[in-house]
Amino acid sequence: MGEAKPNAFPSGTKHGPDWYWRVNRAHMNTVENLPVFAVLVVAAVLLEIDVTALAWGVFAARVAQTFFHVASGRSMAVNLRFTAFSAQIVLFAVIAYQVLQAAL
Image (cartoon, rainbow, N blue to C red; front, top):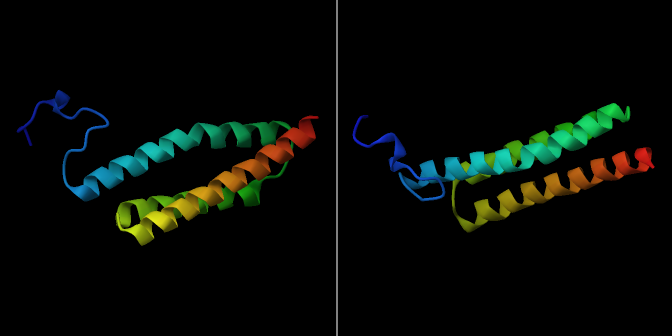
């Protein structure tokens, strides 16, 4: 809008309305977890392990986590967001176990 300089928005500092901050944090969470997911899937593909169903599960949990993150900051939404995040971690662990089992 031309009202602020481009460098007036330091990262990690809350600015803008609450919904904007939740979208920003949801994006940052996605980017933080993407490399872990990518490494696990690439390793599985290289070892010829079919993790399609698990990968779709991670994707669904990621979409749910983002939805709850953006939807609200209330306790119930935070609990649902954590549940979706936990599901991703469990699925990451299952993929990692399969990769390690095939590699060894």
